[in-house]
Image (cartoon, rainbow, N blue to C red; front, side):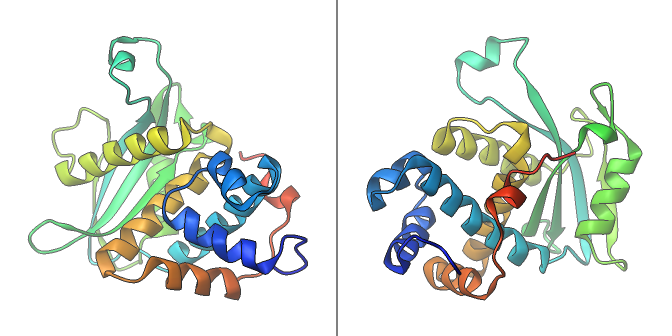
Length: 218
């Protein structure tokens, strides 16, 4: 929020409305700013979510599934040419197998072998998102019977939420929205007040510029 031309009142309204699930077009109307300003505010808030989520690594018993982000409408189910964005989904599991903490990771093009996810993608994900002492189980391949079913359902929920709220996400900014979904899962699981926690994150994080937000993702 530092050095922003947008009044502080509108920033707090933005935090409130994004917490409620508003997209940039809706936010533009609700706080009466341009779409570009609403988009920038949304991604700055999303960056605060990303930083908060990065401080909550997976640990203990960790499951990693290979999965996809894709269209979820009924008509898309019959489209053989629909685009799928490979991603990895990781979770800390309880003794009963329930999801305690989740991480969703967009696989970069450099870690793909044609449409298959390379081993280096799993290695990178584990190094970035899990504690070194974690006990990690990997289910490579989207048809692998070893995939953790609740984690697979969570990925479908993530795709459905992205598509219904934002009408689909392009690869360049997909990771930011996956981080938001993971942060929301954490807040919901911990039964924390979203508005208070998100306001605190936004107030304590360093400024990020438009150029940094829009830089090309490898």
